[in-house]
Amino acid sequence: MIIKNLRYTRENLGLKQKDLTVLFNVTYSTTFEWETGKDTIPLKQLIKYANKYNFSLDYLYLV
Image (cartoon, rainbow, N blue to C red; front, side, top):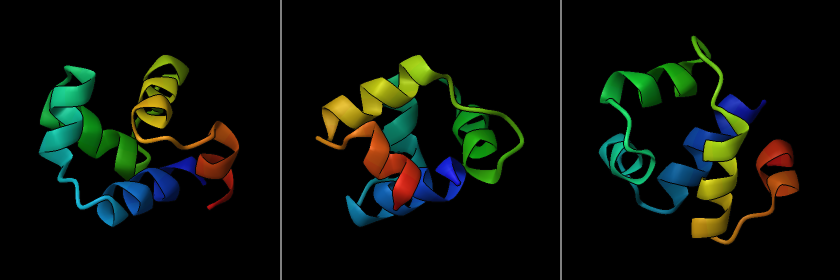
């Protein structure tokens, strides 16, 4: 579920995957794998994203 929500919220904010690579200091392939479910986004990164864009973690899990 979080996979869909990460992409959904990113797109609604008008962000590109490249923007997430800068925020998280990871490669493009890492963000791609998070959004496609091939890898799990670490909680630490998810919290960073939620804080930066004023989302609650609940919102990211429920959207």
